[in-house]
Image (tube, rainbow, N blue to C red; front, side, top):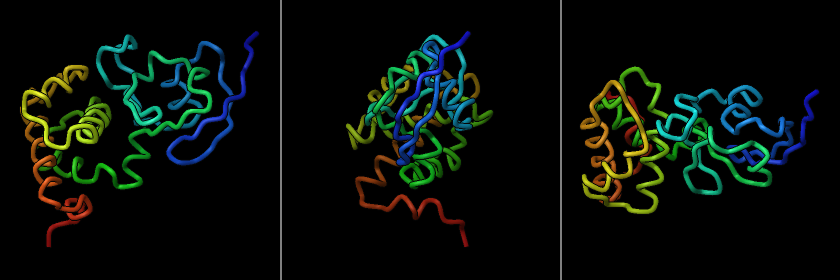
Length: 170
């Protein structure tokens, strides 16, 4: 017999009450319970970074956190970051630099990049690589990802608006 526990969470700006089993991970709750499938489960050991979400403003591995541990927290998934256009410039730069291929790791990479640029608006390439060390990608070779993040940091420092990068070319 499973015992579901009620949880109160703020997910992507919306206050929700949902139910989770005591040992259900936050990643599983987001994917199965809330149908936010941008949070991927890969290694389920906190190594690959595919499950990264923002929890109270900090990136966390949702596969390592029980959903009940997030009670009362604010969670932002890749869907939430996309909906509020917070990462529009990153998404465009990833596309322009071909920094995504299969796409499995991309949500975690974008969460990492956004968190890095929030705490360090002008990171060096070495700092970008260090930040990405918790994200595993089998397709791109990382250089394009580092290039994309570096481009966005430079553009943001120049005051260019993120929405400008999401527009289609004329």
